[in-house]
Length: 73
Image (cartoon, rainbow, N blue to C red; front, side):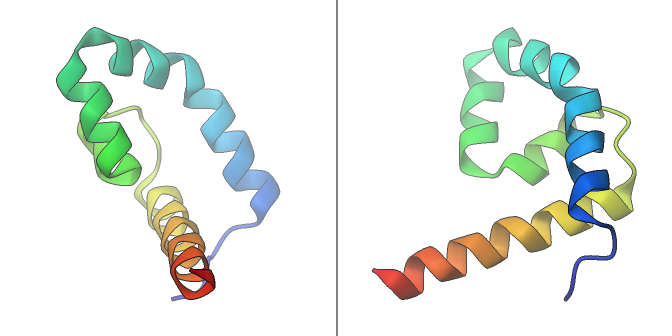
């Protein structure tokens, strides 16, 4: 699946929730571990107010990076 929004908008959405996300991660070791294992799923659980279409695009970007890193190994 191809990303639906531009990278600038994706970065803006992420920047807008950065403070809330950092606070959620610091709340518990479980939250920090969840974010480390699957950042997009953790962001959904954290309920940061990020629209689902943004999270879907972020998941696409993360999966693409993961595939490229796996292919390079």
